[in-house]
Image (cartoon, rainbow, N blue to C red; front, side, top):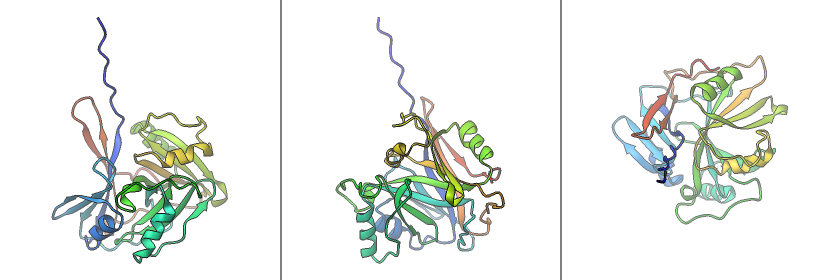
Length: 266
């Protein structure tokens, strides 16, 4: 008698990142019309947008808060969107009146540009290949058809606390370490993937383009290595980051969990 194989349980995945905002004005035009996301949910108090229901969504919650006032040492930094052809995406956005810098290759990390959404939250656009290595575009929306909402970026100064939390408490896997010594920081990428890296050396440049092409979302930690720098939490009276949600698969019905209290990280 043949033994019955046990189905493999998929790893957890990040399903949403959350923001408190004073208004939904302009969000649908920006995220749906301009970036090509779908409106996944809309009610009196929230709006959710995503490139597909299986990707990480961006969820906005209406609250009585002041406008967002970003600072360079904010604990929450940015959304990261990866793209097959960044030059094409930037050209498309500029043709529609969006102000953003020309794409540039930042060291051996990535080919990138950036823009901000209607509430002032920063969005990094990162090509899945380095400069000169664009991939062909699929049919569909000029950005939405080629994009993955790939990164939630947080700034930290206590690396041990952050690694303990994401690596041990949440069970995430450290998949890439990217030192940027001359700028005083190092990047750490955590995910719930069991895929084999191209190179087992976590600092290897050979892993980076492969990492940018993954179809799921990572936590990106920017570890600030300057001892005198502290990170700032956006006041709850102001628009800002409200944490992230993830789905944990159990073999039965999936469990959806929300991480909002990250006050123990700095």
